[in-house]
Amino acid sequence: TEDLIAQAKAILRRNDRGGYTVPTHGLYPFQWNWDSCLSALGFSHFDEERAWTEIDTLFANQWPDGMVPHIVFHEEDDGYFPGPEVWRTGRPVPTSGITQPPVAGFAVRRLVERARNPALAETRARALLPKIHAWHAWFHRCRDPQGSGLVAIIHPWESGRDNSIDWDDVFERVPTEGVEPFNRRDIQHANPSHRPTQAQYERYIWLVQHFRRLGWDNSKLHDASPFQVVDPGFNAILIRSCTDLADLAERFGLAEMAEQSRQLASNGIAAMDTLWSDAAGQYLCQDRTTGALIQSPSIAGLLAGFADIPAPRAKAIAKRLAALGEQVDYLVPSHDPSVAAFDSLRYWRGPVWLIVNYMIADGLFRSGESVIAQRIIADSLRLIERSGFAEYYDPHTAEPCGGDQFTWTAAIVIELLS
Ligand code: DGY
Image (tube, rainbow, N blue to C red; front, side):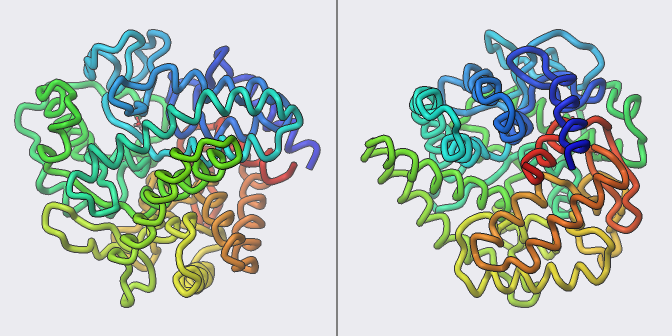
């Protein structure tokens, strides 16, 4: 245990660029939004000051409209595509123009709760709270214009689950005409059979060019996107962050913020039920363009348990996980292995991701489903012992996939073992 923690700390230090960490050397040479917030949890066990700085640096690059971008390009590095010259968002420090799962509220609450230096924690949290609140308000204003209680993503990269099977049908609607020629760099750093396909990349880039033409104006992008998906995992993260922010706001005497955050969370929880499928035994994504549920049993519908969903729903998710646990050696596969398109090595079409395991287990513990939550944690640690600190893992063989020496994987190991 001590040895694993020491290795994990060394990875965080190695990937520290001063004020922010890169997810891994080579493949991801900048600051990523949810990577940073989750990595702060790892730092908090041995360097609280550094943990706060990780989140502060991200929020220093928040947009005036409230959005927190998914990548901050702090330094030039031509080893990544698409870089700032493709996004062209016009920000002082260049950033991408889309967002990522809003784990910041959850992470900040955790940092406050465990603070060994409560005065430092209060100062830093008080400065961050209004910014996180503005981001949540941005989501509801710009990504839920009809006031449904749930927000849509407008690009697969926003979900973090870039090439999920969930997007395959909706992606048919995204054209590729007019995509400027490009040179992928990801497949020079990582095994191409672990990465999204060329056809998917063309659509990712078409969407970026489309939003760029609209001047990155978030009052237009949602309605103008041919890709509008309501993802239960993404929404659960937002709901959980609203709940955690409400608790923090109460603690610090910020009554109005507390009340607004509480309201957003309870609207979200109520609306989540529209994504429930009895047939699938889990939550599903919704194609907002047609209103239909996407019949694709992915990990998004299990990550939904990260929010405080009703107890019968948590129980059903625990049951689904137990069934998946009979099909794989390591929980939690990012897609149901019985689906034909499942691919145990290809990014979000099957592999296990430690950060998602951590969030699912955390939610299940809160709901009292601790047997399955413990299995998820045990499987996660077996993966590390067997295959090191990879980006993701084959759920059957534990083969390490994608980038190595991965920051958030290391951070979660410190979190689980400390
Ligand atoms: C990538 O480049 O693979 C990222 O997931 C996009 O943010």
